Image 1 (tube, helix red, strand yellow):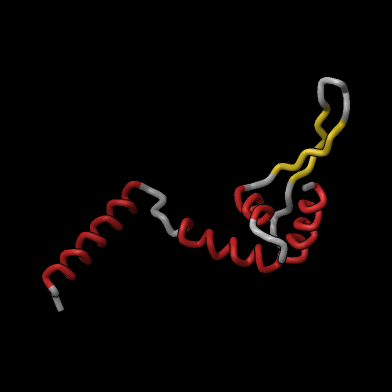
Image 2: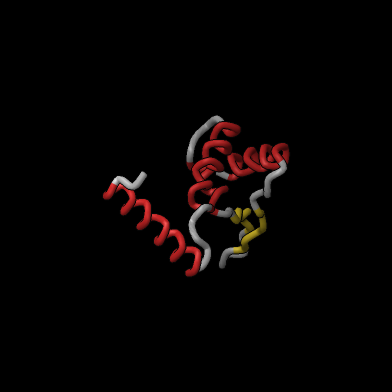
Amino acid sequence: MLRDCDILNENYDRLGLSKIGSSLFVNEQSREFREMTLAKMQTMDLMTGYNIELRIQVNRRWEEPENQLPQTFAEALMLATKQARLSTDVLYEVP
């Protein structure tokens, strides 16, 4: 898995994206291990396939609808109102 993270980081660097964080973890027996800190999208990139460029592109597209969700209560109310109006328009076939 560490090798896969390193390969992802090479591609992230080439694409101008944030790289996976890396640090050393020391266990109770004083043994050092490399530890990777992944963001949500980096985790998805790691989990979703072998063609890294395609994987990154698909995951970025997959994230887009989530980023379009309302960010505030007011935005959520406005969206609900808009959807209710659309629903009513369809129900009564308003031109």
